Length: 342
Image (cartoon, rainbow, N blue to C red; front, side):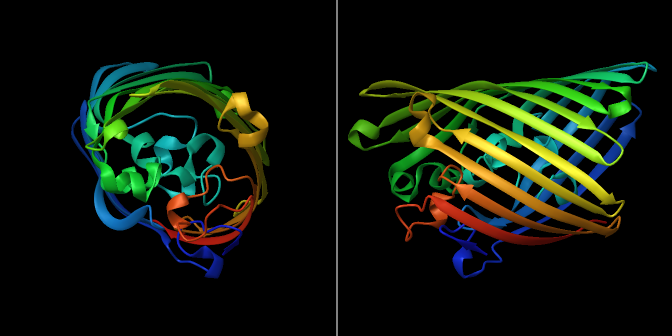
């Protein structure tokens, strides 16, 4: 339920257009070879229609393994390491709230398809010593066609009507993560580089490309009953078309606190800030305040209740607001999600 703008369906009247169902499996054929995959049905307003898709499927080959370190490769459709939460964002139990932190993970912008997994090869390694652990992850992916739903979500229905082909070219994701004292302190640096090419038969829009590169800094402190998380991202977008080029810097970050009131109850508060163009900070900034409560009565069930207060339009799904233009500068969202795993 929302006011101001719609978020996943006609939420100003109350919407059930947000659901996820998945089946995943792993198969270890030898001590050094493992296969993993997942099919997913995701309904998220007008951006995802609930069709069944292959979410990830890869072969995991451990080339070297000792008591304290390992090196391996994954080949196929692999999950990308991006910040703390991206590679587990498909499971409600692993997300801090119902909606991912919008400022860093672009939840409402329809970028899940581009960020979550890539077709290609992934190198990973880890080193453990004295309650400390360091891991490295590098994904180099092949070119991949964009679905019609993704093009429509990213660029709007009018652009989708004239774009006959969209392609994500040579995406690269890299991350180094360090965990201290058994996980009570974590730090991570993520880098990304990718290009989106769009092709149309209409004049000046015939060729259009976006080069995106940047990084995410992540830090987390876990205490007995409290967890504090912060992430900061800076993404540079270089857009090219026949009229010329334009550079835009997207800066975003959030601060999050979680309090475990009881083993089965967790309270969460988060503040997010995003700026779509650092050269026009006051015109393109958005502020989000999130409070939530999570109840896990059993390991199989979870109930999340969240309230979101959004000031600005960054992250509001334009595709859900085609009849609600221009977007309202204020949006409040009340959301409840029930989850089950087996």
